Image (cartoon, rainbow, N blue to C red):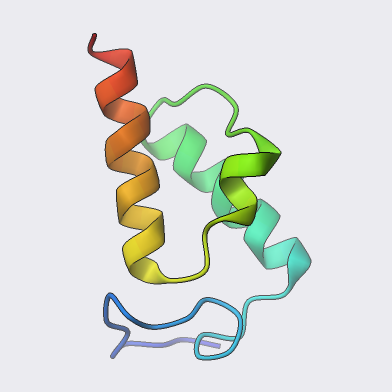
Length: 66
């Protein structure tokens, strides 16, 4: 499913159609794209919206730059 009108408040599962495999693939893609270490399951479980994804990536990147 291709979604072109997602906003920050769009929910990954309910609005964008992600399933559990899709969420795992998203986490792996974020790790590769932003050269992040493995995202802990506890952090991944808190990600529900596009805004949450952005906050997670920014937080992980700030941890690396310290």
